[in-house]
Length: 245
Ligand SMILES: C[S@@+](CC[C@H](N)C(=O)[O-])C[C@H]1O[C@@H](n2cnc3c(N)ncnc32)[C@H](O)[C@@H]1O
Image (cartoon, rainbow, N blue to C red):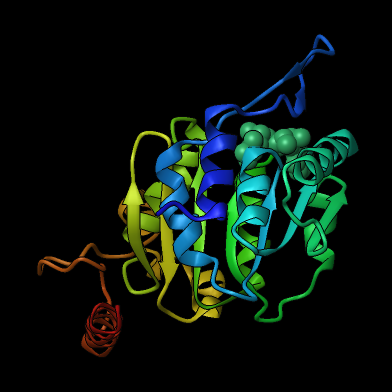
């Protein structure tokens, strides 16, 4: 039997409302990939806190799933249209906090506590916005929190996803397809945000070491130059996560 929640989500995806204003002042809609919905459902348990840069159909899906949700977008009209749609379709907005601002201005002011179960990077896709959004929302992520990078068909999204794909000691990739990528934090978020470029496999692998004096290891290793203890920790974390799930 289809639950009321499922029915609302299907209704929304089948008939998405126009929520965004384009450059010509017309109301249009950016659809989300329906394959993203199971990941949102997995991340949103009762009481889960979620945040996204940008707002739209994804915002309504998260509210319909019962998330305590914050969206960050400079267009206050989106938040009003989202509220109207929700109220017209029996979706509560009691736990909805729209922040009307540019994410690069507001995210650095939000601190670094373990607050979020899910963060979606889907605001401005111009360089360097997705990287800023990712950095500051990961600062707020709980252990084992989920990060979605949307629009990986764009260069900025694909570079971020390529970087995360290689960070196997910190992130486990749950899905990557031509539209979006989803990761779960299995390592220490401080390590994710603070470690040296030498310890970041994607950066190390794609750098010109002839000028830096670093030596590319000859032994086959998925993380260049990484000590055995760190590799062991990575294997233990990934195995533990897989057993737990
Ligand atoms: C691709 S749309 C988001 C789509 C949304 N996830 C959905 O499901 O419809 C891009 C969003 O980024 C917002 N945006 C543009 N510049 C931004 C900025 N500097 N900070 C945050 N959001 C921004 C737009 O207002 C829009 O909501």
